[in-house]
Image 1 (tube, rainbow, N blue to C red):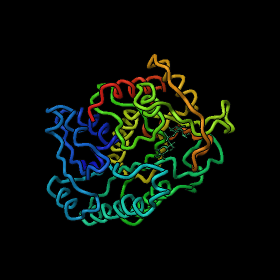
Image 2 (cartoon, rainbow, N blue to C red):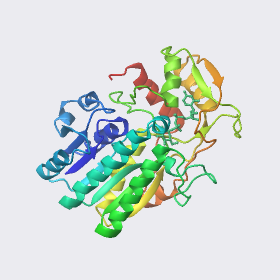
Image 3 (cartoon, rainbow, N blue to C red):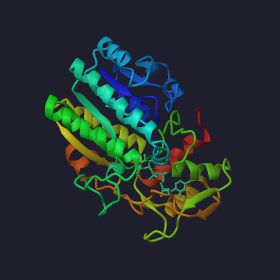
Image 4 (tube, rainbow, N blue to C red):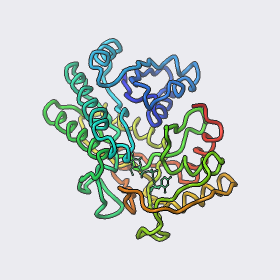
Length: 331
Ligand code: UFG
């Protein structure tokens, strides 16, 4: 049985839906529902929901996690749970260290005690820090510049140690900018407050916020705004399934980038969003947001080689699915 931490969260819930598309499959979800949404799992419909064993608990709750692992004969873990905002992590480092690092270490302790050795981890391109070249491959030095990036880096290091000392098989998937929503419109991105670019652009299109604030147009990029690599959440889900398949074949300790290799500026996201929504989007330019770097784009050759993975969604399609969700959100 597979245990999914953070399975009611944005990326976790998209993974759960994809995983359960295999008839008869079941998952155990451990989620404290701080960032995750019970409704995300309930929205999937009765047939899928009945195959999800939701345990409302923190990953740091060793006893509950151990009970779940024993009760359901867990042999692999998908570890999505974690706080994910760079800005918050700088404001509240203790919260991020405690939740992301200490929580993960407790999860690993329980896995170790029960002999569970297979894990796929949601890491981030934020572990690289300021890019020395672009696109970024997995050999780029890791010098995280935010607390958030550091928490992900520390967890990766812990996993390499378990690989070396206890023969664990692990894959750290370093996401670039996760975006979009499931095409069904049943699940999507829902953070409170929402700080990510695409949902904020679409909220401006909807009139839910008056305008989009663009943080800086004086970067050394073609149009002066920051470039990011927006990868669709279902493509991420697909990569997780492939990573899990890999762990079932042999023992790995690997880190793999997940992006599209297609960098898009903030202005390009706004222009495409205007086309997709057919609405005007009011924009105001302000100064740079602390911690932002000019350009983050993935080299995804390793994902293609090792996982046979290629993103299916381009930026337009990603924005279309996000717009579909944004107009009919359920949570
Ligand atoms: N941006 C704006 N206005 C907004 C929101 C964002 O101009 O209202 C800009 C940002 O300055 C940045 C770009 O849009 O240049 C993307 O910003 P996001 O906040 O959407 O995403 P980030 O790149 O800052 O961070 C995201 C995730 C992190 C992850 C990181 C890796 O939140 O978890 O991608 O790049 F580590």
